[in-house]
Length: 414
Image (cartoon, rainbow, N blue to C red; front, side, top):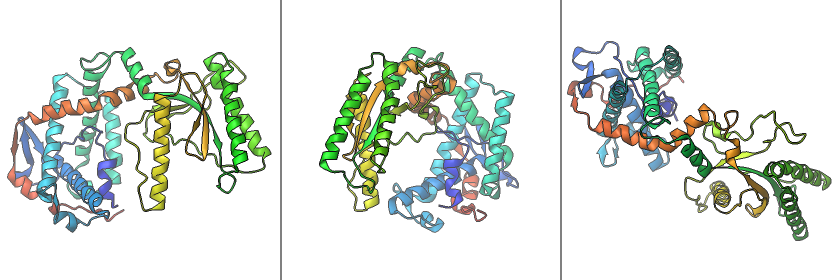
């Protein structure tokens, strides 16, 4: 995939809507302004940026449809959602420009201000991406334009905090957010016991029975402890015992684990440092994992490609394991779970509330992440309603001059 295609994914826009403003160098007097939105003159630089983003989306849409990366000519000659590609791309650019103006208007409405530090951070971010993607400059988008666009992402966050923070009219209380956290994430710890030999083949029936018996004994060993903290820590002893067993068998057993969440958020951390301890363990949360509740349906294993089938089966096993954790696993009770026929888990779920402290999973970053997770869709809908209500007057000259296929759509420098 060429570098231009990466702009939408790696650009400065936030998840809800990217923002950019400014003028391009050497633009004719009749096309300096692309449109007027609610009386706000949208400069050509903004329109060009969003035209590039619209092209990226059109190319991705065509690639998903055909399975191959399209050329510029392929995109130019196709219809997308029964609309000519040029019109489709410019419709996207127009919408994003209105979204941008909605952010500016809303920021003014709440009396928002950016700090000097926020402006400096936005400038650094803009400079980085401007250097990474020469296509911006090649199409007349200035660095100042990028800086102001980056600032708009900070404005958007402040608008979100204003409405959906703890003091916001559309948000929730701290206690309600903690319950949301508890409902959507689980604090678990487990030992995985492989039913495969060193070559990846299923062990004998006798050995499998012994391993399943050992798993039951491990669960009982954990449950013999009275307090939750001691049960969670006992998993470490079980793990050590199982490791010694594997070593004694003089074989290398597969040690699959549940795939951790891949989002780049603080909630994905699996351990947390602590100076407190009820045993000789230096970290009482060592080995714990925070697992997010399923948000999609099960993966389909119906595929003719062996690799794709294996991947789908793995995703399906993980999905079912999470369903078990959130819907069946009793809190504070170690249980044996058959993961995929080749692995069994001795798993226990602890009380997540215990870890909701400022030193652990309840600091500013986690709170911000959870608020975003809970209200992003609502916020996006709110801004879109504001944008849709704004008046629009297009500059036909600018739309002709900066039609998508008159721009440089490929970056040959990378």
